[in-house]
Length: 522
Image (cartoon, rainbow, N blue to C red; front, side, top):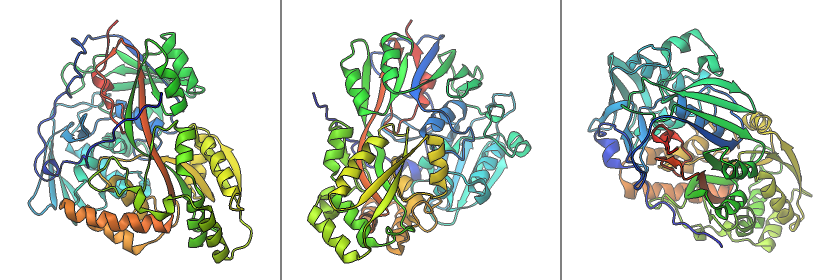
């Protein structure tokens, strides 16, 4: 049976919250019917893919980000409706001109080593993120920040060059975990287990690469009574089918699933609950516009016309996905229907015509394909390979382990590559860092477009939804026409649990932050 889910209803960033004050943080609402939480027990989480690095500011991989959410704390969090709520912060207030954001942080918070967390650590964290030498994943989120001050131990003030409508939501991003100033200044490298010291709900106590990670509860966590668990163990499995086996035999309490094929199998399993949310993550193809023949716009457009997105959705995601452009369909305030993009209707004749007009001769290139994140990247590559063959383009496939793939990707050492890009509750999350001249990831495809870049920057600086929609419409049309990426589809974010796993809130961003309130009914 094919399962269809409705996508998220709106651009989930609450402008009223962003521009005003965040309510004091507290525990997120417990899912109904969960019963009274119990303390104790170790939750076993099964997933495919290993952590590549433990520096919370430098690694974009989902596998690492999920660990950061356990170890580190964040000024803000997203609630079950993806609204922005204060977390480590007690409140946040934005000035009437939008250029001053004042954060009050909780007092009495401690890092895992017992040191107090103060505004100096928050300032150090964001200064580190903003330092170009750090090469922080989240740097472009905060480039509107001019200066950061800490007037007292519990106050941090962000002074902005221009207003930023998404700023508070960015403070909930997994790559903005608050690190200790003392530890950061003493260690140039924060990628090791010994330096993974945060103030989050769990402490990392053991890591056997490619095998498991073990966490113990932070008994001094700032939310009273949480976490309920004594600990968490993340088991790395060789493939996602092993997650089904682990849940079936009760060797795991929870599993993170990416592959729709595995999800379909799990639905037939009695005793396993599979929760599916329309994802905010984009399945796409990166196109290196600096390399021949992709420096030719007509070649890129020809490839886009040759791609059969519906066939990919049906074959790879078993129909559980929607075609997408640069803004996911779940962000309904801003996303354009893909029916407005001529390039998204497959047209082999048009593709061949564009190749003839490009006059670049026979085309042969290599798609750099990863083994995980996503696991089905090779399936997408093979489908694209066959579809491009119909227009006379020869595509080779080179497959690498994920860490090697990331190294090549970070060097922009590829012709084309499949990817799974994380999105967020505001369009700016995704498109600013790739498609503006200030974006810290614009090197990936070397694409430059002043029209789309300016529109994206202006949209960040205004809170007028109608104006933002107009600006994002301009940006989306420019980006689809320019083909720096070939967007394919958004699929589903899946979490599988046993009936004894209670209280977890599944966010479509893939976040596991609410393991802090998860408990075992055993």
